Length: 125
Image (cartoon, rainbow, N blue to C red; front, side, top):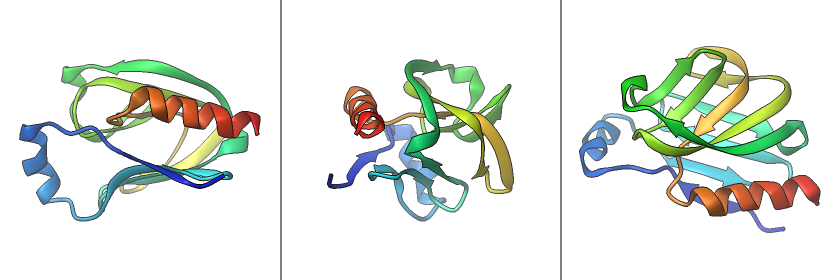
């Protein structure tokens, strides 16, 4: 299958924040990997084979924006609100920008349903 790229969801006010963080704000899905990039502040490369569950998630406004370390998870969220939770069979190392191990990753993408469906298709392929 061809890789798919999904833009991380932004709002007008969060674009000013993004200008200080050079680089892509995307989640790209290939047959083997989900690569989440949020400029120089963080990134994750998650093997598709390690994903056990994909579910909707709501990132709260009080959780902050950017690359966030929460209780038991790491979030890539330029804006609060609708997101996707990716759960793994064992921890992976993500960069926040320092290395951090987690089994749960939250990502806020523009097309949450399309992103979830693309991940589900890759998992079953």
